[in-house]
Amino acid sequence: MTQVQIKNPIIPGFNPDPNILKVADVYYIAVSSFEWMPGIRIYQSHDLVNWEFLTDILTTQIDLRGNPQGASIWAPQISYDQGTFYLTYTDVKNAHGPFKDCHNYLVTAPTITGPWSDSIYLNSSGFDPALFHDPNGKKWFVNEIWDYRLTTSNKSAGVVLQEYDLQQQKLVGKVYKIFNGTALAKTEAPQIYLHNSYYYLITAEGGTGKNHSVTVCRSKTITGPYVLAPNSPILTASDKPNSPLQCTGHASLVESNTGHWYMVFLTCRILDHDYHILGRETAIEEVYWTKDGWLESTVDGNGPDLTPTIEISETVQQVLKLDFEDNFDQEQLTPGWNFLRVMPDSSWLQLRETEKQLRIYGGESPASTFNHHLVAIRQSDFNYIAETELNFTPKTFNEFAGIMLFLTNEKFIYLYVTYDEQLGTVLRLMKYDQDQFQLEPQKVTINKTPLQLRIVGHGLSCAMYYKNPNEQDWHVFKEAIDTRFLSGGFTGNFIGISVTNLNQTNASYADFDYFNYRVLSDK
Image: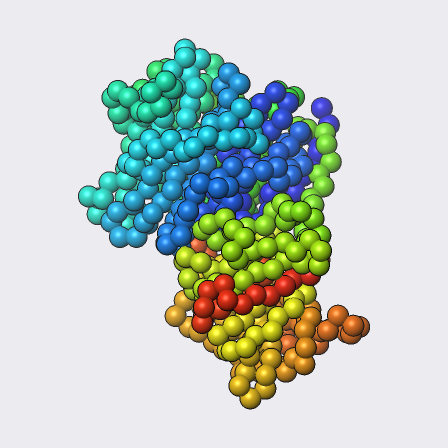
């Protein structure tokens, strides 16, 4: 069979913890969403090469307001059995100190697009849950277990297994400790597969940073004992410092329509040795079963460097569609928008059909973890142009609206229209990096809106521009803004539009005429 070259990552930008499922001739990948709503994004493919956003699963019933940064929705797993889709996920309420307050849930649906059931609570002993449907009719639930007594900073203590009763909708019977982990430690992301009469347990170890790895063990019985593969870890970039793909781990398996096996996994593209502003992305690698019944990757611990372009045993050409546009002229927002910690309601987000505008009412500050009114998309490329047009009439300095780069509530850049007591309506720029708040002294007087705002990103820097809609040329507000600080943590950088009112929530608004995001190159 002729192999085809594809480029990793196959799903660029913040799309971590990929879990893959094949039903009939369709492939699905679920990814973590953390504090961003809608929760748990699903991508679809018919060829394993080209992926498109299909749907989100957690859309209405989840309220993450107040959850700490980097917590909330972790590690979804999708499965299918006898006409029903199953999805497990963790809602992490605390991830600091010796404790990890995390609650594991299950939802079900007749189709991947729903309707999805209410969440069924299962346990809280650890995170990264998964459901395995044994051909003998039993269902088994696995998750990482957290032990606050450990003296290490990461207190993952291995993997536990318990039977799930479908009729009672709860876990029943004995809890089995099936894997203690290896010396790599930080064991998480357990997935069970049955192949050639062996139960295979795949886990992520080494943490989600540069030591991230994929380990494999197996057993003749699902409750163990499990034997570690002699070639574990089967995937890691920890010994490949020059590889363009780093932090590889958190993997899952699928057999393709052509009979070949593939592993999708988390990865990061790092610039200048330390900065991955796009966050953790989804990549793919072909894997093989050895004569001894173990999994083998072409980029294992003793293999070559991981390269962005690989060959796989499929025949479809890859087309990456990363541009995004919303003119706010439909009854609903263009699919792909994201919101912080809770889905929006009409009290602060309204589509004005007649005017073809999006009205956003002012919320709390960008540092808030409760009601920050930000509408944003994932940054999917290092080089891009993001642009919007807004109508806004602020009356005090506590009212502002504009376009922003947002990693967390402690790391963002905000180009915004506000009010100055001496100059009236002005354009300003703020930057917040942990405890370092910087308000640019530059103020540009704005005689009237609408005003168009533009961000142009190039690698680890960006430039800000503005102009009136009837002007031909853009005016430079600030060039060569260092964006390296928009890196790290669990999520990637987002780009969006925001409205703030620190005097009174929802008391003022801005109207946005459009938003678009265009990738400048694939370099």
